Image (tube, rainbow, N blue to C red):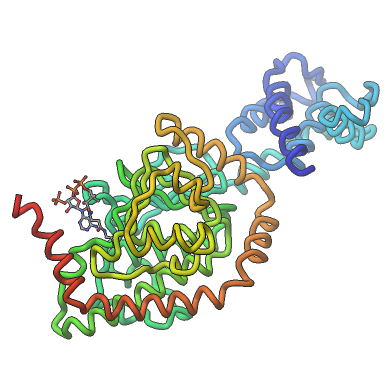
Length: 415
Ligand code: COA
């Protein structure tokens, strides 16, 4: 039902605006003396409407009705049949204005447009991405448009490897009290993603998207994180990293709105494991999904030890999480980790068209639906996250892990 209504509105809206915007001023049939100023205001309101952000269906109907009343007077056309939903909605709105004088309708139209213009701030206008970019992030590009907040990992030269800065992380230990401002956190990707998610959870967007810039979605943990040993020692670093990891994954567990991964290319490590906590995962046909934990002397995180067996069955999950089997996008989709795969050549266009349509659905209904789905498992997921983080804290101190990381970091020197 809701889907049908959505399609109806999308089809008729452009024609409503077209008809209300393309009528020449001479057709307005106004009294020249009394209405000269209002006619000018009316014309200017007509062109202002073109630049407004979509004001919603109810307002669009009001605009349509006022326009018809202002230009043609009271509605005297035959009532459309009940199945002609589009024209009936328009007719009802116009007819509801009764015998409202043309001048008053014109004035009301001007007032309505002026109210909409002043309430739509500069972010409602279409601007280049550089202008829409939210400030304060160094490793991300965060933008909000069309009711979608997009968080894009932005270290393409390093395949969007996710960096940490452990020493200052101590400050954020209790995940419940995590509320840093842009000025008091290190500009590292783990922290920036947490900040961006916290901000997106409170902004007025309907859905939130995580994606990557360049040819990779993300190559997972930046392995040079392991070489930066603070004076406090390696144990302390493992401990603070485990706390950071737990807080990071908790942000995904607790995220209150629909969260969508737009996997633009290969994904490795934690960028794969947290996919089980997303609501929808769209992948380019070029994407691959790789969790080489054993190869690195590590163990799974991101609640994947629970979500993967649940999503794809224990046998397939074990092959990925224990043996590091890399999946193609088609395989990941067949196993339920990915919602849908799109050809790489049309990936961005198709996915963003889909997301823009979803972002127009009633945001509160989407939020509640997500909560109903997630709440049942939240405590369990948090407990699993804490357990996985503890296991990793030990793994990071192991010789297996140290040797694997050193092998990666020195591999070019060896070539
Ligand atoms: N950590 C640190 N640096 C990384 C990285 C990571 N996870 N992934 C990529 N990089 C760096 C590379 O060191 C390289 O840096 P350089 O240009 O300064 O030498 C740059 O990003 C490009 O990567 P490169 O390895 O040259 O590209 P590639 O196409 O040959 O391989 C990967 C890409 C992702 C397959 C490869 O870099 C890789 O295996 N990375 C490690 C992935 C990983 O194990 N992640 C942790 C999982 S728990």
